[in-house]
Image (cartoon, rainbow, N blue to C red; front, side, top):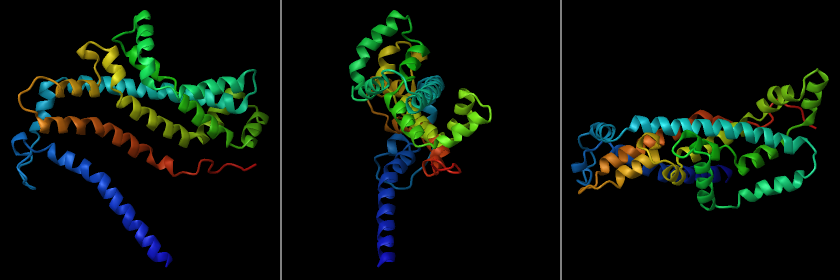
Length: 271
């Protein structure tokens, strides 16, 4: 009976995986088919790289890719550092107004990001950061979810390791960077993946705060390409754009996927 249940579960999971991967596989396949043959209902046809070549000719894809990469990487590094430090402070230190401040940070998670766009734009304008990397990166350096996630992780770490490092002569920063942060690497990588994906796919804020083609990110550039005045929709080139957009996200996830299944406190002592 148990084997039947396991077999049935595996079959269900396999079918679910196929149903999720099938649209992506079709998208990649159609991106190599000429526009004139996409709706020909032929399963096997002539494959070519013309759609990708036309995309790179029609728009500065390399510049868009570079902008998105700079914004996503810098925002991810900044948010991970700030969230880790803030989460550790909320988990280990006692100070006046700690609970109230943490409650305010949690409240920021309940505010839709669209509500902050107008005041944030005026703030960037007053700081003369409109149409710069600063306007794209600075607002993404803080996230209530990251602080909450790191705090909960550090609360689950045993204090014996930190006390032992202090007895060995480590100061507070050495304890954090040499003991706590390496143990929190699964949470750090998870937060980094979430942050990278969110900033890589960000569309509304880069669209509003940039007005120069040289500062556009991939989602904004491709959206403008799609909305350009054309008599015929170039589905093959649009699918090629989608594939280019999703490749970095897949690579980042594949590089960090093992941390999702690692034991969070592997090798540590228990209280």
